[in-house]
Amino acid sequence: MNKDDFYTRPKYEVFKILNERSEEDLREISDGLLGNSIYISRQFKTIESEPDKLWDSDPFRNRTWRYWVHSLIMIEYLLNAYELFNNKPYLDKALEFVWSWKRHSMSGSHSDMVWHDHATAHRLILISRLAELLRLDQDDKPLLEELSELAKHHCSTIEKPGFYQPRHNHGLDQNAAMYVGATIFNHLAKSDYWRELSLNRLKKQLGYLFLTDGSYLEQTPVYSFIFCNRLMKYISFFKQDGNPQYQLLEDTILNQLHCLTYLVQPDGMIPPLGDGNPSPLSLKHLRKLDHPSLAYPEYVLSKGKKGTPPAQLDMAFPRGGYAAMRNKWVYDKETVQIIFSSAFHIKTHKHHDDLSINLFAHGKPLISDSGKYNFNYSSRERKYVISSYAHNSVVVDDSDSDIDPSNIEKSCLTSYYWSQDTAYCSGAHALYKGVIHRRMLFYLKPWDIVIVDFLSSAAEHKYEQIFNFYPGIECYLERDIVNAVPAQGKKIRVNPLLEEGIINTVLIKGQEEPLRGWCCVQYGSLQPSWSMGYIKRGENVFFATQINLKPERNIEFLVKCKGNSLSINSSDKYIELLMNRENDELKMNGKNVSLNQVRKISEIIHPRRS
Image (cartoon, rainbow, N blue to C red; front, side, top):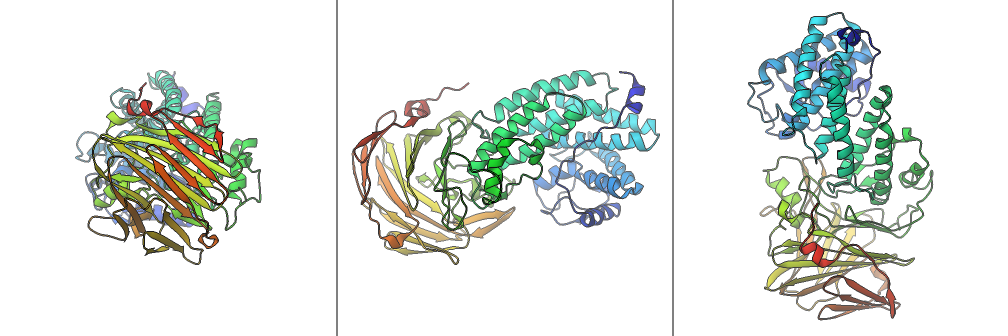
């Protein structure tokens, strides 16, 4: 490529990394940056610092803050303001940050984030966007050549197999950054090679992270949504470049939206499954796809005012390890949603959350996982929110499940079944040494949920069945029954159907030592919330627990267990469950139920790994 082409080719619009800010906010942030008031995000207070003193600083002792500083995210605010207000000092300040970072951080900074894989990708995108504005707005070839050398160093770094993250969401942004850098700096000798390499890597990343059933490998739906929006940005750049690969990205987004339509709560919030806090699902940018299937999430998010309801109420996503159940799509105070999840594909963003449930009813989340808090991995709050006690499953011997990478694939859904009035799903994991945990969930629509846990081992263990209530729900104990009352809502009741063997019922809120009974609703903040547990001891132990969403009906369930079989009897249902060595068998009212089998128990204990 002739160098002159770099200065004469048409302009590219390089996408923004963060969401847009209002004009008022953007001017305030950018004017502050001109005066060395360093703003990173709403998560952190503004600090005063000259650029040269910024790169080794850590005023909040927070890796996320360090990460964004070395991403040079300050430049994005300045470039946005420059494009909006045409104020050249914003552009000059952006350059000052770049040259200061280069002087102090290219080889001399002590920060752990200087060449962090993700920060490097974002920094290259911002350097490319800055260069594209300078290329058109000023005739300063020496300066642009210096930026080109900086971009070359970044592309060369991302190119290295030991630096690139091939099975990680960071790898997606590394691919996009290399493609953008090689396209903007098209006069560099290796630009064509970097473009081709980034596209080849991108195809592999899409096939690895975004599963065929529409779920996301890292077991965090919030990240699926984040990357749907990010892929939309890549699409816009690909289209400018005339690259037909944008169609692959569009298909990936639509597949993810299918799954998110079922996982999003009836109120439009993505629940805190995996490493995410409650977050709104929005189609603001995704509507640009203009595809008929957008009518389904549109219906959910508009609460039935727009779009079309999906044909099925219940859906399993076996590859991702989710089952989502509802009583109806129409949203009102009687809409119920249950999400059952169990999978261990990758350590990234993994919590000790296998076989956990999340429950939404009476217009609000009732039983919920505890969110992500932040990414300061050594903090006690972070350790708590990823722990087994912060999720709605069974804790063995007061310890966390073992999520060492050697145990990958030892957790999954095992079967599921849907009918008009009953939804059933089961899962299992072998993440406690010597213990097999099998969970069966019956949703007897619309008001009764029965959760059966069977834990088998050759040795005696302490088992605690955990349920964590969302903040704002008050709980009180009545013998072994926990009554939960949402603010200005109807009471629900958690009732043990197999009281035999219960040695203690625990009800805790806001405990400090050790942490228990907390939930993260907003980044970096814990709110006290009620946590309950039923405790049993033994080798082979059954729990059977009813969550009654309308206890005033006085519906009784009689549960009996013998060996590896269990029966549930109510006024209109008689359920027989047999747990064989490899799978479940189910009868309802005397008739065999044909279950959709996902995996055998032996395949969980001894998984095959690709």
